[in-house]
Image (tube, rainbow, N blue to C red; front, side, top):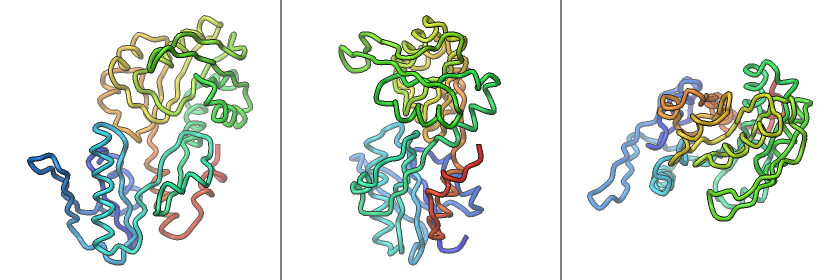
Length: 285
């Protein structure tokens, strides 16, 4: 593919390699290092003059450092006279974002959504999916669960939770009937996993036959892995927007959806001036 370069930051080189493999190109040459005072230094190792440049950087690990590295890489490519730098193609979970969200950036931004991959996983891996109910672990996720439930033609429910403080849920109230259903919890990300574990327990108490969790970004910090190992989940499914190999080794319940094809196709369409939104309105389920 001519006139295109894809560079990887240090946060998730495996995802970047998967993307360029699908595009049939090599990763761009870049050296990232830190000075003795921990200042980040980025050196672009090849010409990007007149090229479209894409930078792959995940919000995982040392998030502040990774963000700074991304900004430095953007600046370095701009100085090197790339014709266009598309550095931000965020992966949001399900509901479409409003166009005004793009005002945060002064470069082209296309939001990608995990919904197509999630629907595919459900149909291929949950034999009883037609007897499922899609559940949001909080009221704020109502849009995403209704979108998936509508696509699957199944019911949805939500859990209203009250917090005493961050990462500590005081009470949970289930709104919806999950009795004798396969409950599929859907959320945008999981950090310490206290909320989804409590939610899973609440669903079992309410009569759910099985409980799955599908989470776009699996951060899994602190006690998350031990909580999942001891919880009643059939599976906890995440995408590889964040590296998951270590988590999967430590927790057999964690399964991973590869979204590199979605990113690669978004890069190809953006490079060719095609609609990225077409990606999501024409995905076979």
